[in-house]
Amino acid sequence: MKLVTDLSVSGRPILTGEPFTPATLFRQGENGLFFDPSVAASLYTTHDGGANSVPGNPVGRIEDGSGNGNDAIQSISTMRPSYGRRPSAGLRNLVHKSQLNLDGSGLWVNNQSGTTSGASSVINDDPETTASTPFIQQISDTHYILWNVVQSSELLSGEIYRVRARIRAIGDTITAPWVVIGGTTANLTGFPITPAAGWQWVEFDLVSDGTALKLGWAGSGNNWSISTIQVERNTEASTYQRVLANGYDVTEAGMRDVYYLFNDGIDDALASTLPYLGTNATVAYASDKGATIQTGQTIGAGGFDILRDTRLFAMLVIDRALSTAETQRVTRFLETRAGGYTA
Amino acid sequence: MRITTACPAELISEANMLAMIWGQGPEDQLTYRGCNWVDEQGHTYAVASWEAAEDWDKTFLVASDAAVLENLRPDWDAGILIDMQAAARAQGVISYWTPADLPTSPPQASPGTLVLIAGLDAAEALTALGLSHATPA
View 1 (tube, rainbow over the protein chains, first blue to last red):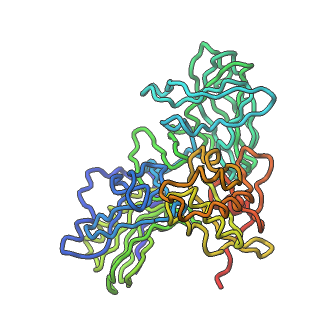
View 2 (cartoon, helix red, strand yellow):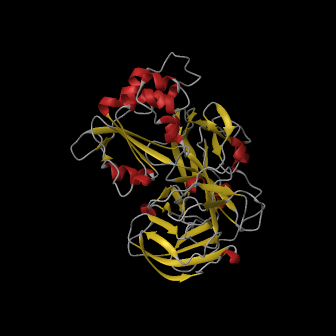
View 3 (cartoon, chains in turn orange, blue):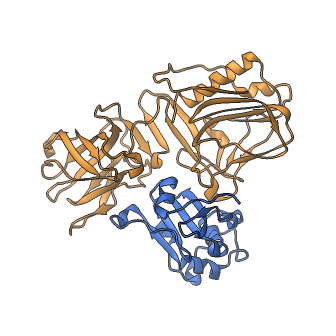
């Protein structure tokens, strides 16, 4: 029997104080495995240990939470899944970097057109008025293009997207987006921006032509800064989602985080070596497609790849059937870990 | 920055030497195996895809010279496993593309070339490479 719980309902209440963990199912010496990527201390960048993974890192090992020591590993570098987190209500911001990475690396402004030249740099300023972390990209030139703000695979030709960001004019007044590659624009708001105005929200609608979206702004030869860029479907701007680590680390103020292992669908695998678990095992997991519980499974001795679909939020394998009450609790646990997200 | 590579069947041995330089241990000599992808002409390829540091290309896409590559020999190797001459042969046939190369289109996979596509997700890169999954024998 296969039970699939649809998690497509949006606005699911946030579950707090979850007392149940599937680890308790193994109290009578049951064999199997249990992986929960929300436990960051259980993930490592390499198969033989290494540092704990943080969102954006590869995962070479995840420790088994069942007490059986059936850790899942991947010894080949390119085949390791990536560790990710996202808001429980899902992802709206389509950009892969909405700000700089916290360590100042990963500049998403790295191309220019025209004949001028200039260096981009990081300044310690945060328009979100939180910490003075180096979030902001300062462009010391007029002709920079923010290439690959959104990849073409994320945009549908003919669809409308809302582009929103905070911009600051440091030198001359910024009149309007200078370059938009990837579609046509309308409904510009927020321009012009004078140096005296400080950080200002600007936004416009983009009708995508299906190619990658690239943006630039004119500054008449002087500096300007941009941060907190958000591109989302439709024309109603919503709460900003901060996107770092090439899209693997997305957070939203006031929203619970969910954690996952990302499978690139090409060569990724993360396998545990299991003993023979009999013919009545249970496999339960949460992925992009919801919570799935498979009963009456035959699990032979050998490698068991835990990755499912594109994102895996939790995985449980146990060498027995679950009671009705246990099934309900496991289902709720899996739904909580998936955060109501569906592909 | 995601990097996706297409390695033609005849380059697998050399490309796996390079993969050990790019990777983290001797296990990376198994990066390319099983030519499960095919182009329109029927040539087969092994593929790999991974998230790399933003400056990955500046570190690793150096001259295709064994002596230069020697400077990148990992500490774990101690001159034993990686054949730098073979790695240099693979390095010498790399075709590398990033979105900064637009409007030039990404190169398609081809025999004799180790094609690397940066900055696209894996599925999009494979489409750009002109590859589809080979029908299992």
